[in-house]
Image 1: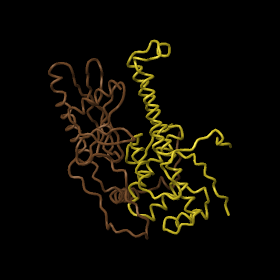
Image 2: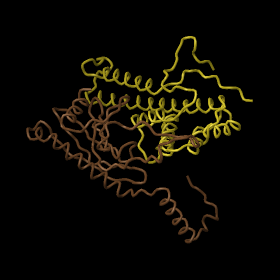
Image 3: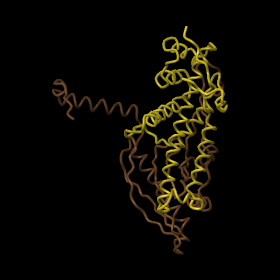
Image 4: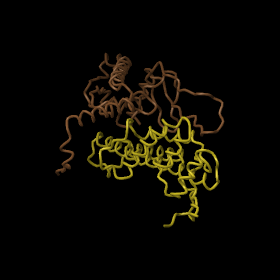
Length: 192
Length: 194
């Protein structure tokens, strides 16, 4: 299908285009001050850290030949970040195939998410505040003009991030990612 | 003067939807379990095909449950919008909603009118309303048959994230004239008629 542009549009000059680019860049800087390249690199570093943890948990089983791990590639597209390639970890355990699949970094309530997918289910790993034990389900909303005495509440800055297992709704909580909890997650996605 | 909306008390709540979703997921896992699989239904299937079907059913269930959660949230905001008007509340949000009601009655847009009124007249709502608007784009995609490639904003939406948004909304917004935790009231003599 052809789109017929109005004559006026076709006569736009290079200067119009330069103005357009400049405006778009300013808008982007104003509305979107996040350094997305840095965010992606951080996420990929945490993802590699996650894989090293998992490899450590499975090391003794790999040595005994009971578990094997291979990596494959997957492309992720996230708005503002664009397309990038990540590693997927494929695990074979006693004839069962599991996949550890990165989901992305633009996740509500987390800095990143990776899913462990098996025949009977999925377990989600999230990169969250090291101190958090559950997602925060409350925002302190105040209607204008109403009295309040809690001053300017600011979200605490998260200094340390950690990978945790997110339990499913309704009782969502975070379980520390350790060898025992990881192996339980593996059994859950295999057995259901 | 516009007629008042008669509330059905049939609106859903978050816990009810989540429990329903988990019950159905557990039933599906049982149905697709190799120990109890229906031999006739799955004749000729490999174990991988059975697992793949199970994953597809759970995904479909999660889409439907997300749609229900977002529909429940819309009901909370709309009941609150109407109740603030009926009860003649005087706070900043209620006054803004009353202005909308004067021109649009019960046909106010959830995203362009009601959520904007909340955003303009409250503190600490920009993030949750931003996430909510993204989630309603997701609902739009679900409700209209998922036929296009979605572009829902910065975040990735799935059942768990929709649950998190829903739970945060229910725990945080001071809704008027509604208890978002009440289960829907079903009864054989109360089936909706159109």
